[in-house]
Length: 279
Ligand code: LIP
Image 1 (cartoon, rainbow, N blue to C red):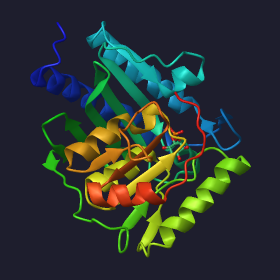
Image 2 (image 1 turned 60 degrees about the vertical axis):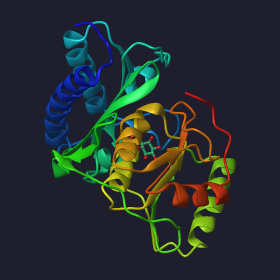
Image 3 (image 1 turned 30 degrees about the vertical axis):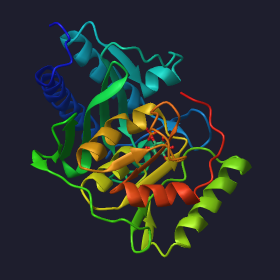
């Protein structure tokens, strides 16, 4: 099939990815209740299981068989030594289990996250919240959906009275932790109603998209954690940017995604940024 990047092509790609994500979810649902062992990746709190690897292989093989010309960036393939390479070609950006720590601990917030980029622009996002059987989807310009029903962000314009979502992440070095505590304190000092962390960047973004939280920020994430979620938030009416207030860059390993431009800019104004190596 020639790739034109037209809306109908992208819708067809997304529909197939939804089907693949659901199949992958079946495997995860069966495995989460079983005995699990894990290996370590970038740190002693960055985990990977055989299920992450098997599910990623399944997703990539399924998409490759259907779309042999497409490219792939997968969390576990990169952990295995493949370089992240984003070109203009249609590129699927995959996190087979977003929330691996949750998976290991049987904490039921695990997601399959699949983003699609064409000409280096995110054009579709599919996130399957496995244990809730919720399929979040978005195609550029077409809105965001959960199980086929439209979703929308809240109207929150200030941090005061808002629900903020963030994560500690997988780094524990002193500089990163200092920044984390500083930002946590800064957010609490705004009289936000609370701070939540689901343990899955993809699901955190879905919560903002569906209006179950007002804003999400995280440092240290990778493109596969946020590719799908960032377009879902945008298509739900939210504002996604870099924590400096500039354009969102999915390779920069940091994100702010808020219900409105106002709340997002307010948060950007109080955040401190750790140094991060790009994807
Ligand atoms: C995880 C994220 C989580 C983040 C972790 C990690 P994984 O993804 O979703 O929000 O804090 O550092 O990146 O490793 O479970 O796919």
